[in-house]
Image 1 (tube, rainbow, N blue to C red):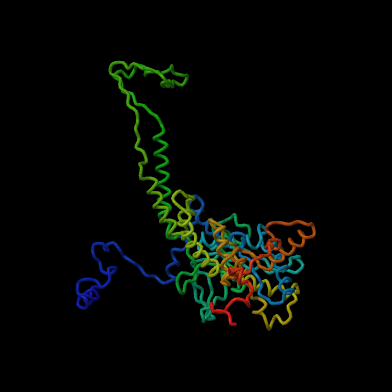
Image 2: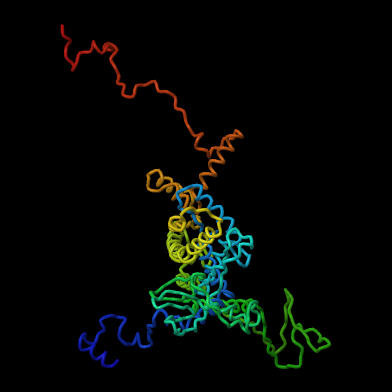
Length: 511
């Protein structure tokens, strides 16, 4: 290292080329490290995950941040819209999918869209989530013999690293072939931290593993670096600040509690005498002294009384907490208002700008991670299984598999601060040809075909009952009264009302 510094001084002089280089006074304690994407999480992942789960359990702000992201990224679910051209086939696919969604959870606790929220929450809190495709028997009576099981990241051991005889390698519990493709996951049969409480453990602590083919496992995590194979918790950059901020706020709460207590300290020359207002001792020898409102107490010679005056929290407490929460919100990728619920310093423009930035981040997570890693593989596996067992009749499926599996995933629509302004802008875009009705409806989280069918059904029912609503544009025809004026009529001279009698170009008439 010394020879490198000497070479740098000879080439560039004593001043570093970049401010971030060198070992001056300001960078004296800065000792950076640069591990690879795999090594960075190999030893720190378990500790980061444990601290993240601890904060989410006992820290209201950490839990609020995670819930805000799940509620905005998933909401009521990211729903598929088949792109098959044939309408009857498309409706058959959607009908079977809705039936299967009710039975998708292997634990029977929620539906498919609830599993989306559960897997996303597990990914945000623990850095990653594992989703197993559990194929069932046809006699189980499911619409499609497939169910989904969500597992926490602890089921995948971070310390399992070995080279296998056939040329495959295991890194952090994931088995790769010679081309770097994931071929299997080595999973604990039960949660390793459940110990003897594990319900399906064949050994003490459930530390025996099972090799599961990669085609049956979905590894959900947000890749931040090329070559990354495991995920990091969402709260990683806010762990220390959140923990210390919680301790500071708790100390201020205790300070206020102490300040609210009214205590007095009496000094007297004769300790054997009774205090002012002291009652007689009870059977245990305990006597209480106190004063009632309006009491004028005369102190004996040599007696003195002092009252406690604990320090207040100070006027900078609110602004300090607000600034710290902004830093935490930035580390979590959400807005300050979503983290704290504090809307005292926002207006329409500021909160809309903040929501637009957050929703752009949310869309990256929705389409780049949740849809790509979770929704599409499950959709493909579901359709393969449905065709295999005959629940769907798709001619030429083996040849046109990509065509049949094409789908558009529609997240739940955003709720705006001022819906009237947003919908007026959307209507203008549709009328100007800059947006289609289907795109506008999809932006609100609905299927355009379903909306059109509902509108047609509502109109038919209203017509059958003779109902007329002002929301029905079919009845908004205004009949204009006929005009009696000629559009381009000009005032005429009554003496020359006959066009033939009028001399052209102001010339005298010919004899």
